[in-house]
Image 1 (cartoon, one colour):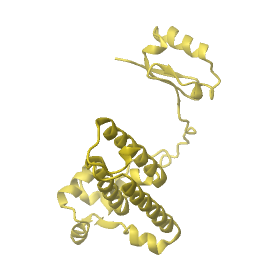
Image 2 (cartoon, helix red, strand yellow):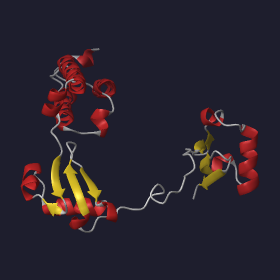
Image 3 (cartoon, helix red, strand yellow):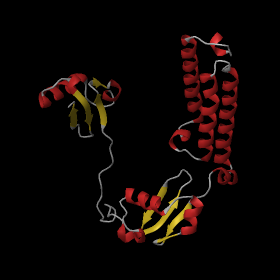
Image 4 (cartoon, one colour):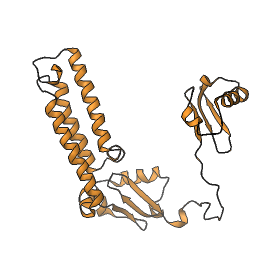
Length: 234
């Protein structure tokens, strides 16, 4: 455990051990903080990412610094982060303090210029985000909001929205997610056991229909009607 403490110099193996310990510790920290910190990089998440990255970088680049202090500091930050997230879930006023309310960028087909300045974005960025949503005309937008996580939510006027089955009074079939039976040439027995099929049936289905082996299949799925779709390596 000499690599764990500050020293005048470290061997290559000790540097590797430091990197492994830091990597595993960061994985544990990310697991404790939850997926929110990964999928939604908000103000507090950004601050945590910057702080943790800066703290753990020192013992990974300076042999004179031990890892104990950095790991204790990061542990405290993770605890504080968890407390803040918990408080934001339980206390609405505190939640508004941490996560600001959405900022209207477009109202009734008109750009709210003062809110562009408030959100610190340009018209070009706004138009770019609208194009990603296949919106070519600002006047078609009833409302566009700048969300706390840095994304733009756009809502078209009803007359410009795409027709749905509900609009046309069509009763759709219940949704069913196909099961993945083969991935990258290997059978997923966990998913296969959830179906009424067995391994022999699956192998025979793939061989007789596509004249290939299981190892040649990139992806194979089965729907609720036992229809198998196979995608081969190319």
